[in-house]
Length: 447
Image: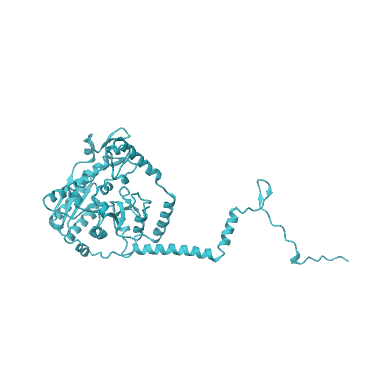
C-alpha cells in the first residue's frame, strides 16, 4: 500500500529566502544598501504615514496660499478716488512745471500723450501749469503731432515752450570735439557718449523754469514725462505719493509686461539693481516688502520709469540741480550711469525726503502694455499664478544668485580711476554698470 504524503501545516512551512539584487558587474548578488534611492523613497513614504509630518506639510501649504491671497487682496485694492476732479482738488493752488523730450514717437504723442497733457492742464487749471517740450531730429511725424498739441494749448491759454529742432544725431556727431562727452572707444574712434547727450537735452527742458523763476514765477513740482501712454489721473496720483512729500516719486513702466522697462535707473533701497525683471523685482527686503503690500510709496534709492515728480526748489537754487553723466575719465574705464539715476545722487533732498516708486501708477510705451497692466476696477493687475511664481522665484534667486563678481568689476574700475587723481570722486557709484554707450545716427549702441 502506497504511503500518502501529508504536507506540513502552513505555519510550519519554511519561507523561501529573500531575493537579493543581482550585481551584473561583479556577477554576484549583493545586499540592499541603506543609501539607495529605493530606501530613501521608502523612508519618505514611511515618514508621511505618520500624522505629524503630513500636518506640518499641510500647514506650510496653507501659509503659502494665505500669503498669495493676502498679496492678491492688496493688489486688488481700488484707489481712494479715480475722479479727476477730486484728484485735482488735492493739488489746488499747486503749480506744476511739465518737462518732456521727444524723438521719433509720433504714434504715442498723437494717440495718447497729447490727450493726457491736455486733460492734466484742464484739471490743474491753465494758470497752474507750464509745458516745456524739446523735440530733436525726428524723421517721423513727431513734429506735426507736437504742433497739434501746441495749437490746443494755445486755445486753452496754457503757457508753454514746445521746441522742434531739426538737429539730428548725425549733425551732433559731425561736430566732433575734444570737450566733455567725447571719448576714444575700444574700436579706435573718437565718439560721442549717449548719456551726456541725453543730459544736455533734459536740461534744455528746464531753461524756462530758470527764466520764469528769475521773473518771479515759481513752481512747486516738476513733472518729467517720458513718451509713454498715461492719463491725467496717473500723473495726479503720482503727485499724491507719500502725501506729496518726496525728493522724487516715480511710476512703474512697461513695454512687454510683466517685465518692467527702465532697468538702467531703478535701484532698490540698498542701491542694488533689480533681482529679477518681473514682480517683485527687488533684492532689498525694505523695497520688496513694501511692494508686496502694494504700498503707494516703495522706498528706493533711484528710479525714473516713465513719469517722475520732483520738487522744483533744488532746480532753481543757488547751485541748481541739473542732469549729468559721469566724467569722461571714468567712462573710459568702460563704466556708465544713467543721468536719471545720477540726478538722485546729486539731489540734496534725497536723504531728507526720500525717493519712492509708486507701483499703483503704471505707464507703458504702447497701448497693449498699458491695457495689460490696468485690469477692470477691483481686479489685481497680476494673476494668481504670477504672484505664486514670483514669490518662489524671488526666494530661489535670493538664495542662489550673487552680485559679488559684477560688483567687483565696477568697484575695481572705480578704485583704479580714483588712484589716477586724488580729486576724482563720484557720488553716484550705485548707478554705475559695466557698459559703454555711444550715439549713432539712428539711436545709440553698446561699445
